[in-house]
Image (cartoon, rainbow, N blue to C red; front, side, top):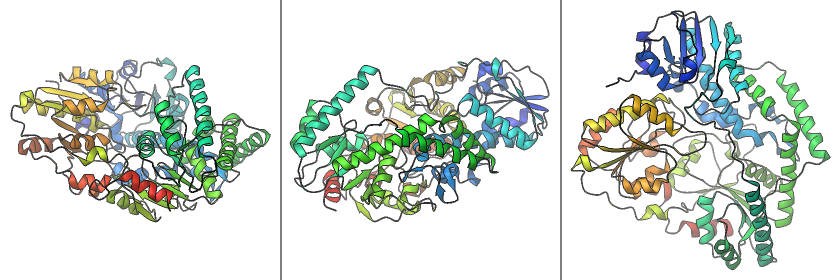
Length: 612
């Protein structure tokens, strides 16, 4: 059986000092590095590190440089605040246009950039200092959830070299662009075919025209709901108030005659959110923003801010992109003029263009409600729109909460808005939770599902090791039918990579990625996976055993799960399987979704929004 090399044991096979390190991100790149006693290969590919170490090469997984960092840094809490540091001169946002921050249209990309830089620069700096490195040879170096361009990854390494007085050799030209096979790039966009865009635009025009005619002259509240489909669809289907005209964007509700007829019957208006075309004023302001940013960037700054500035310069500070954001602001102003919104409801406060809608609403003194799209607990992350950034006043005036866990999260993230508990619109799927079935007697016939452990803030090595360790532990306990389900989202790990891990360690495990989770919840008798996923609650609601994991280091607040045993080490699964004590999820369901305290969440929501 192939042993797993643990991060804490990695140095036992290495020398205390090396002259240089060679940075690689894939097995094929590692093979380009000449083997010698003075070169330490630092790999961003965990499996490549396992293979190279088994062959006796001087090799180290890059997360070795992160193992002592997470407990001493607050970036996980302040990430979305620090991502805006580049656009502030003191407390002044240099990117404002008609009162709206153009720079925050780029906030998501910058937060990914900042997280990538932190992991790469901290890991590399700690390895350099630990092994007294004097030279870096660069082939490739990237975080598994990579959001950087090749130029920015190279810039990150060059900054570390400059700040540590290291010599630097760039060998990236010798690397095959397709050699990285661990994961997909986080920022790859998938454009719709032109015919599909044309069909959506045509549907939007027709839907807006018909529903506007149907609701024209209607009195009462006119809330705009900028929320995702998972929330919008059940809310729209259960809406039935005569003196409220809710407004959804045409793209968020299911398309088709059934939903359109429902909107016409119930008096729901569908509105089109368009991008707009830049005019002379937009382009002039874009030029001013770029010039002022360059003046601000000329000042001395710490490495992390200098890196973000370089990233913003490369990816955002382009006349066309800034002007496009400016044109969107004017388009949103016209949307407000046309539909006369009396309230705005959002389920996220960072994404563009909803962020611009929030800022226009604040400028026009339109009250704003915030709710969840999915649970943000136990990640106590600060958000500026809720009061997490002292450089600006909160945009949100009221919070519509799902339950006590949501309210606890607001308190812990410095949000001080008035609260109305309305419950969760999707709570019905959890209200009739099925009791857990009989004890698992014949383990050879038990269907076991492992869910990929994907830390939002932590070490990816936990994900790889737990996959191997769990399969081996469960097989030793007599379980034979074991499947692995990967996260299906964009910028995530490839199925082929986990197949390679399974083959190298002889796991004999079926691995899936894109199939809907519902079919796995129906198949499984027992699930082991992260507590941070909605699948945790879906599994419990189906009456299945779920052993939730949050492995250290993680930076999360486990108080939210005070009524539930959280697994922090794979070895704990052994004990839980032997005891076979399923989770009593009733308190958790009510804390997160108000399944016992709110009878009809949709009705409570509409009464809060429509009759404030």
